[in-house]
Length: 287
Length: 331
Image (cartoon, rainbow over all chains, first blue to last red):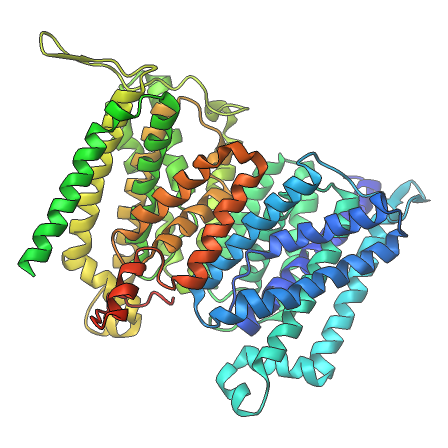
């Protein structure tokens, strides 16, 4: 493997990891704050991509503005999701799962009806290639990585330094205790869902430009998110970053050597193997 | 109570007789096809419920169907064995895989088990995709159909290209599987599973081998999933990995939850409604899945214990409270 290929793999790995982390972080927040296994995260990711596509390509809005609007729209959808789809079933795992699955079915078929199943693609957010000393890197991938890195930093700041973020942490550690301290658990859940959905929408839009858009694009990402959350251990935000980097690196580098399906199988195998020795995940505490 | 039991048994008998007479009324091959597929899925979803009795909701069940189907399909195609032999072997293969990966999975519980099993299922499907030498690049084709039953002078049943013999085969298989699963649930091991679901600490403290029992539940459930998958392989004659992937596994869980997990009949009702009703609206094309979504939303808002729990809800409203909730179903 020459240095050129190595640099390219490194950029790809960072880009892919950052996308995985954006997706997995929202999923992990919902899981730890609300104890909800949000299968609908896949369609929110997909929905974000399509909203961005509609605004940017069909209505001709500036693409960066469309990205922001897409995140806002899906954030609002997150509010709706929390208020009308998750809150009525608070604490009832079975019904929450059915509800999120119903959302998958409904939203996927709505997109099918409105847009059709053919694969589309957003135009690149940034074009061009940086060349230096035989190494060429796609600007788009670098920009994607930088955007998600900034978002992650903001999110970590939010969780660590603001009152709402600390409340979220408290609820994820001990819901009853948090309520006894006067924390409004519904408001915390609403904020968490909004953030998670907006992050998924950003990831969906960015991936829609790099790869492609299809109504079923979220399924693969959802599996990756679950993989990362398990690998990281429940309730560990820092773990999500680490696990996302590991998985992104595996997925970006192994396809050079073996086929894509084999990479998936191998990645899953590694996760299962790690669980054999650390059932609580790499970075987590006892589940 | 005796009277009620009698009415109930008569009801079952009428349903079973009607199902046996069905090919007389339903002659269109397409409708029979839907019935065959529904019956196979009823086996799979009921076996999924058997696993969930022990407090573990597996999201890998379609993958185990796939193991059964691919194993039976490949060995009958490559070795020329009769499908009557390879279908049970397919079930055994699924069971062995379930035991092998079940032990590490017992280290995680409840919702974490579901997530880990989802990854396990994905890994299985990806391995099926990778082994293209046997499973085919674009799917496994050329699977032999069930071999004819030919007793000279008595009967001669040919399966190839016929829906009716397949229908009867599937119906018998489903009835036998359901009876076996029902008996297992109500014998000692079924009680053990329910105890584990209620509290694994207490169960272990009275000497129940938690890991062993949970693996046993997984093995039993996956055996039936493998059998159903193998039967599907020799019925459909073509297999693609996508039939057993991520969404199908999730849909199986959904059939079970919509039908109701607390009652044995739940998966049967749930599968029948969720598989067959969207077929009624096939004319709507892209809108058909919306019907499915609508059913799910109605069930989730109005029937907290699934469609089968509706009877309990009605009884409870009439003052006859009977708590049939399976312990640990919130897990």
